[in-house]
Structures are given as C-alpha cells and as structure tokens.
Length: 263
Ligand code: DGL
Image (cartoon, rainbow, N blue to C red):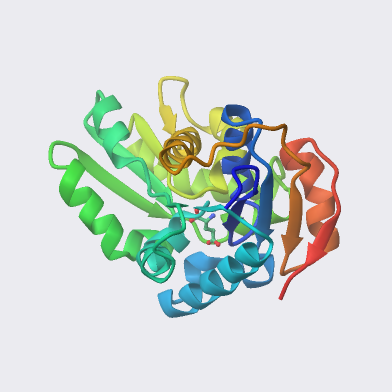
C-alpha cells in the first residue's frame, strides 16, 4: 500500500466532518475520502446489526477507492461495528471513537459529568465498559439527544428549533450540577457556538476529534504510511441527498466540493 494513498473517513452523515477537520489540521499531507451515510441517518436509533451491515458496505467502498486506513468518525458506529470491522480487516489500520469519559473524569471539579450522545451509544456494552473503567470516582449523567443529528444534517446550527431542542437536553444536566459535558457524538461539535450560549462559561465541553487525529497519526506512523507528498482534494460521497451535502459543506467546513452518490 503506497503511503500517499488516501485515508477513508465515514459517519452516519455529516458529523464525521468535525473529525475530518481535525485530521486535516494535524495531518495536512493526508488525502481524505469522506462518506456520509446520510440515506441511513440517524444510526443512533437503529439496531447494531443494521449499522454493522452499513459499515461493511462503506468500508468495501473505501477500500475499492484505495484507502490505506479507516477512520470510523462515529461513536455509534464504533460501538456497534468497531470490533467486527477490526476482525474482518485485520491488516487495515482502523481508528474508532468513543465518548471522552476518561478526560472528562479528570477535568471535572464538581464531580458530575454530563454525556450528550445518541441512544445507541449510551445503550451499548462498549459505553458501559467505559464507565466501569474510568468513571468510578465521578457521577455521570447521560442524556440521549434524538432529533439533534437531523438539525445538523440540514445545516441548521443556529435555528430556533435547534436551540430549543438543545436547551431541553442541556438544562437537566446543568440542574444536576454538571461542570463538564462530553460531546459523545461527532455531529455535536458543530453546536459548540450554540452550546456556548446555553451553558455558563465555566462548563467545559469535551470532544474527541483532535485525539482521534493524533491516534491516526500514531497508527499511520507505526505502519510506515504517513503521506510525504501534498494532499489531493478531499473526495465526498453521500448515500442520501447529494445536493444537501453540497449545500451544507460550506456551512460546516467552509468549503465547496462535488458530492458523488453511493448506495
Ligand atoms: N455522528 C454519530 C456519532 O458519533 C451518530 C449520529 C447518528 O445518530 O446517526 O455517534
């Protein structure tokens, strides 16, 4: 596998773009392929078997496009399919992601941590194991957020309906005394500006995009796969409405690009 081959990144939709921008910042030489599985969003309300099937199909597509490594830029997909993908593709460097429980437990001063994530992530065995491992000395309050992903998919980052929904999810966490909020879904970092208006400045917001980029860097280095030449422009696919992804790319990434269909 040539080191200048691209890295495949995917999510149930546009959420993984919050990870893609961190990868670009840390690894500007890496060429990236991005698949938004927006025809099947939200993963958070689907069963794990369905998500695993989608993840295998998308991985096959990215491999057919020459991907040298894979970033599962979705907490829900990692919980449902991370282990299976690693088993199926033992030679492919794969980076998954999970809610940042460990750093949040280290950061909290009130001893109460809030987790905003999808229903699927919060229900997963992987999340339960994460709490067992890292959250023994803190109280963790979880909040599933149905409907929020759809607001971000349509680029409505500041709309009154988005604000109202987000307020309804965050207010109970504030009432519980959370001083640290984990953004446990890759869509949610796009709501940081709105969240900043809804919670006091003393509340710390934690997501794992930058840590995932660093993990990708380590893994590529280990496999001698870090790109040496300048990156090619990112190529995009969507299983949903390609015109919608074209429309929201400038909102989410400040970039215009063509989007190809994928089924
Ligand atoms: N972006 C995904 C995550 O990180 C999930 C969104 C969805 O429910 O599809 O969990």
